[in-house]
Image (cartoon, rainbow, N blue to C red; front, side):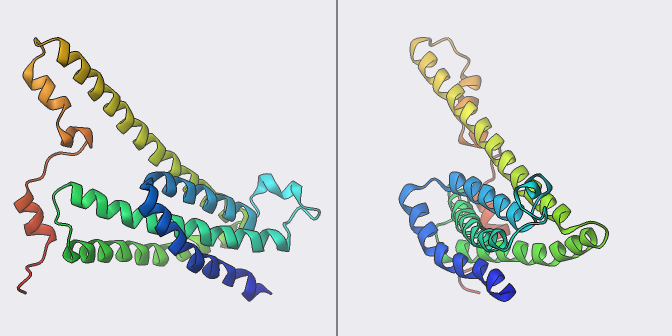
Length: 217
């Protein structure tokens, strides 16, 4: 039963990836899907732990088998949402910043993404073991829940800042259409796509030199 419980995470991940990919391509709300996936994953860790605030919901104050099963199912769904949407968002951001929409860009992004995943899979068990050695498993569950919710909060904050910049840009656009005395430097700065993304501009040849391989190599 223990093997089945933890196999559910992989089963639901496998089944959820095509569905999440379809939703991502159709509705194009990648960051919303990422935040939703982080919240679902946080809930899954809370159930598997269980995290201390929820222990009083169980008869023995330690958790229940159904919570482990449900938590692993939610973990698979949440992980699929995060993985698919993050990769799609990486491709969109890279192309919008000047990289070509080609297999070379996809390959470079895929290698960076999988390297980061591998690094996390290496560091995560080490830190998790260190925590469990001196604390109950519910503490580790709380840490993982906090990390997921913290990442979701940072992403929501980032999206809020971008939304505020967009509103300011639209406001200046309406104002500039009626007042021709606006300083041109200020107007160009507000309408610059790089300032909208809060990133400095990078020349396209530099991107090619540092991130793209030659097609003839």
